Image 1 (spheres, rainbow, N blue to C red):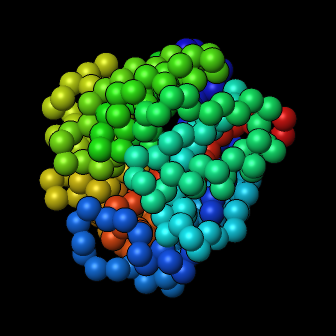
Image 2: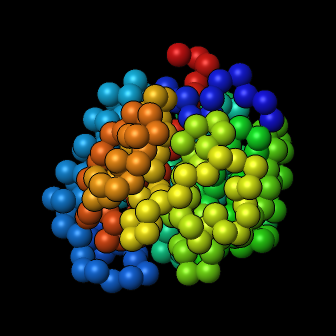
Length: 267
């Protein structure tokens, strides 16, 4: 679908304050627990970076019963046209959708519920100018992806189902949008051919987690632990904002999953 403005232009985001239980968040590779203070500091810096990028930030209260609830992008998707309530693939996270639903219903005229019983995580969804890419993963199954396609169709959004590399948690673990024509990708995901119609910037070997960068207006937010990726993007002319992700990285998280982002025409 042709967009009147770049798909990375946002003026609104929703974030959720980390709970003290965030130290018990899910992780596929146990590298030790993050500290609450460390996660909170990284989250606070994230909020400030968003404000610096010109975005209005709505901060939701912590949910102590849900350690992973700081990652608001997984239970829902938001667009200018409306919001979609998803069904997260991790059993401990399913009820996060119920928690965020009232906020979305209060902010969007159109809020759709994912039909059926399939699973879909927002971390598997990459919005590009041409389509919304839905990656199949351990957290998003084919039934859920097809149900999500039906919701996106109702919002007037084209979509496509693609594959996530085996062993990778989410599709966006391995990629992000740099601009309308360019994606930042790991070599393993690029090899699949899913981005053949885009210009591709490949993450330096050993810095694969840096692929989960986040373009917000004129800024590309990148984990500060990845100097070669930052240098590469800087040389390519992108305005890079390094953000610390050391603690949230211990619970399989990156930059995109900590916010729901959209452009509101009513501001």
